[in-house]
Length: 436
Image 1: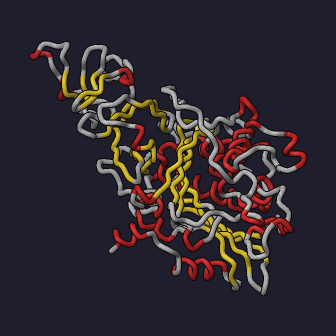
Image 2: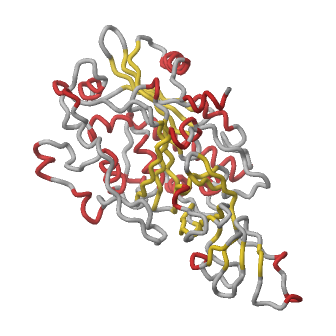
Image 3: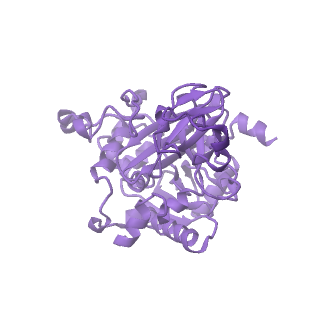
């Protein structure tokens, strides 16, 4: 069981916390590049419990900084986005994207001390159509992680943002809990509805998989397995990668180029950021090409607002019970909630803003969750107490060996099966070109 101290350290992400300190060593995907236009409106951005603003000046530079002007703490959200920076409308102080103070126009020239004042700004880069932020204090930011799906050309990658109103950890743990797919998402699917050569049949014919779980250089991984036909095994490989990445198994291992980030906004809100290769094969369907209930299309989102938590919110939410259809639940849908993502959202939010771990009774099916919690705590404490550099911060190539997905293959050694499939995995053209 996760005790109260462990629970607090795992779930709290603000400045000075054990997990918050760990998160600040990594690059965080924070906003779509398209959310910031040159010379356009500033964007309120909540990251790791800090209230920030993001803007793109008229020359195209992106700034992410504390929303408070360092003069009198007026919010720079109301500032003027000018050619080379943002100007506070209270007294006219102006700051460049990197936090440099450019102007103090309310002072006489001999009183100007702009060289002694900076806005609290964080390092920023852009990749795959996303603005990334590094909130750590080290002199030089670490390299970006070599996560396959985030390295694709912008034209090759689909990026999805969705906000959840719950703690980041319980949202992430939904992704590394493999047996729930056979219930929450496919509970109404019977084996006779699935073609014999469709791998989904193994999940609905055997809803209690067996597991292998292990620590890895990049985090943790599991292999869930079930017997298949002709003496083969149906394997499902998936990973947790530091600090908040998941790589889910639903789909063919061969071309499963995806990555999912669970970026803490604060202790009770998390932003899901999904990256996936556009040429990746889709998930399995039922007989006749009928999709798995809830798998398509993407859920609808509310219009974005300027509120701290006003971005990328689903129409289906706790206030309307996720539009659950009880009649459908009784007759045709296991949950009565449309969209697989919203089924996950409803369940993880229903646990509470921060789940009470003392109420849990974890089972053998939760091996990946318990191992990942232990790994997170060990690494976070090692950084917090001893400044042991966390995995992947200075070794971005650790993530190059991460690939998730499904496999039907003979063999008894799950690691050997993984390595064999990894050698023959498809690699997107844009990545091959970059490597060459």
